[in-house]
Amino acid sequence: MQNLFGVLDEVEQVTDEMYKNAEMLLDLYRKVKFRVYRNLEEIDEELYIEDRKNLTLLLNNILDFDSTIEKRRIQERLASNNFNLCLLEIMEDALLIVKRYPDDGELFYRLLRYRYFDSFKNTNEDVMMMLEDMPYTTYYRKRKKAIRLYAAMLWGVARKAQAQ
Figure (spheres, rainbow, N blue to C red):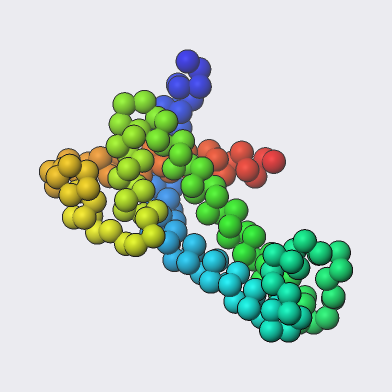
């Protein structure tokens, strides 16, 4: 019960800035995910061309990794990608927590997933149709609540990840 009150308190403490930052991250999610996986493909192609090794084989033999300038550049790109992958994972974890939220959690989860996390970009109108033709005003009211709850969960997950 204490945990539920803590979550409710977190939702009420979401500032306008936290809300806007969460909304901005949601808008960027698909692009960041695309870029991260594209970078991994490019690195894999580079490594295969240079050493006839793919990224998976290289990661399995990381101790044998050569430290030339080109290899260091690839290591830096992998580190940058790792940071972005961690961010994506935190965002996805927060979405799963939203799903378990009482009452409208499942609805909020579906709304956010359809709008921001799907591989292809759905418009607000598309999402309204996917949510059983939800009325316009209801959709925007629920969307705002969903983003506010998501912001509370996101910053809570981020704090826990930072503490670890």
